[in-house]
Image: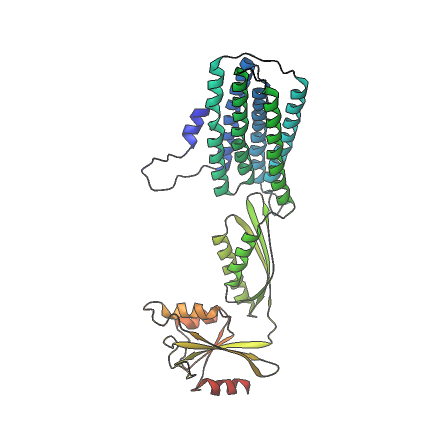
Length: 412
């Protein structure tokens, strides 16, 4: 039965089809896990009865707990899919509760194994050679199945499926210890109880890792700094965003909830709403398994304005054509003191592009968060003009011929 399931669920690595294999549902894999564990339990208990090995019986009990864990996993997955008015944010954390239940089952298993090892004697037992061969055959099976579970769990974002996969991979160590203990028995070295004790320690470590992972989710501390930084970078890319306040995210089961406080450069509510929709769509596209994005925003209190001006040369001559200008000047003017705070000249990196130059240049300039674009060329009705208008950036037509003259006009 074990070999049958491994053959039918593992992807065919020799397939000539270039398309990636279609992953089964998390629930299906959980059912496979239950059947796989039932097969392991039956095989190990039969072998432990025939060999009279405490270590092998401990490993069988470990697999029996895996059966209970698989049942808890299936139950958690089914409950987490339910919708309820009493739980508007979903029941996704039931999956994490299931993984925590698995950890406590492991602690109980370790206690029983240690108790039995202390109570039993160290007498030698006799067994047939085929017992050793059967144990050797069982060793790699949990590792293969666990690797499969972890891969599906990572792609589906299921923490309980990943926990179950880690648990299966850990079975390789315990089965190897049983194998070594049986070999030692053949050389009159009674290491059966020692192997059982080591298996118990491994089970405790495994349960502790699963418990810590589940508790971090329940305490809303599970999202790592790298993911938070990626979310912040996606938000700041939006030209409407002036500053980012607090960005928090938390896991609930396999899903992610994101909340951010932003300051917008625009005051129009309709444009602000559209900007929020674009930011949310970008986060959902780049970050997997995002269930909800909640954005709190407010308009920026302006103390200064940033102007962008096309230049025909680096000496300060204002360019006649927006997209063909080799340079651009960034001017930041203090509104209260009426003074120039910053003047910077940047090169037009899109000047030599043959296609889409205007829109790419607009996106490039928007990264500097300007408040207004000042140009001799009227940008209304053109691609860059639409891009600036959508971002809430004003465009003005000017007559000044030199940058110094324009600065004097702006200060006046």
